[in-house]
Image (cartoon, rainbow, N blue to C red; front, side, top):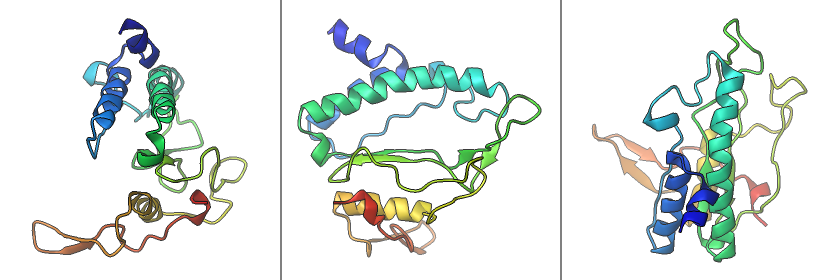
Length: 182
């Protein structure tokens, strides 16, 4: 109905989150919703210039869809059996560049995980005051993947074979982030 569509936000991302909820309700095992820019184009979160305006606009679109999806999954009892992963491939610099933007920053970045038996409402890890260095135990992308696999019940010994015949472990050498689980 119109009220539900409005709650998710009328943009592509918000409506994608509503579709994701519907697919999860029907038992679809894997759903991806991407916010890569407005109207299917643009630079998305790659804000090398005009960072503050772009992040404000992107966050407005993200907040409505993301929060309504989590609320609806929780209200329907689906968050316990649905694992959520929200991330990019790296973070943004803690400092502003000459174009009023933020460049790539792989030393420290944020990931949101939830559902699937993970503890809610906690933050694991921290940076120093200016965000330039990890101040606590560092976790790798492999650790995040190992934790998501653990939540999904996928064995860490699962191995895939690449197109050229190379075996690849699902989470490489990642270790489950214990703080995420009760």
